[in-house]
Image (cartoon, rainbow, N blue to C red):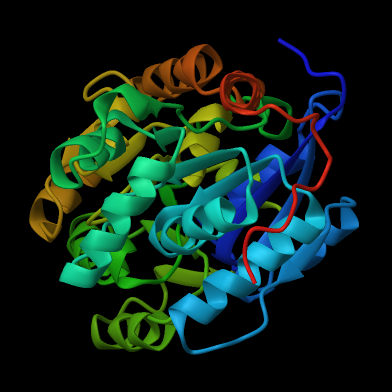
Length: 378
């Protein structure tokens, strides 16, 4: 399916900080088929640490002028969408969904799409009411996993005919399969934002148990976030200074993954983690919590082990079980790579979104792409 001109697709986000959602948007815009779409990004709060990467790739990044009142911010976003001449407004998660969809309707944008990247949804009565209105105005509601799609359907009562699943994917070329040498030291890697939802403190409690029974074990924590000081304090309290290294954000995640025994993720909630996919593409088995979309990625007993969240003892037992079985780790690592190749290829993800834009635009637009609509809002 093709239009006579590329569709102007505006991705609306809260901000471009370092995180999974923002990485998904970066992948979508940098791998876009420019014969189909011309991507842009609008931030509702601030550009964020990842904004320079968008700009370096030639992707325009705009910010809505700050205002504490939601109606005023929606009007300002509507003016911006109208000035850009948006054909598609693609919102990511709750805040962008509530602002972006209403602004797109005021601006006369033909297509509104909204993606849910985790188990997030409005909890106030006003938020729920605005969410119902926004869902009704969307042409498509996307979940990055079946679990996320179920939130749209079962919690937010959205029209099931609008809901679909487009699973996150990664650039396989950026994470070549590393088969190992067979004599690597006992080392695990966790790549995750240091935030409550990723639960690094439970991971540290589990690591203490592992080190007590296998003293040579080491853990690399890659990422930064609001819990960094708590993480460092917990490392000191648990006397893990020789066993745990906190790297912060790094440019070459693949280099940290290579040479590890396995990847570990202790999240309490998850959509489809890009870092998890990257580790599997590298050829690492996984120990992860059975939350959100993770069971759709990790096949228990085949590509890794799944344990309950907030259960440091069970997490430690799974880590020790893998550490003691190098042959199982190698087999699971090969299966991990195969699974990502088969199901989580970024090019497929990008194509599915772009096909969605084109179908929706053809179904509900009577104007050529790229032409700004007539003003409908002051």
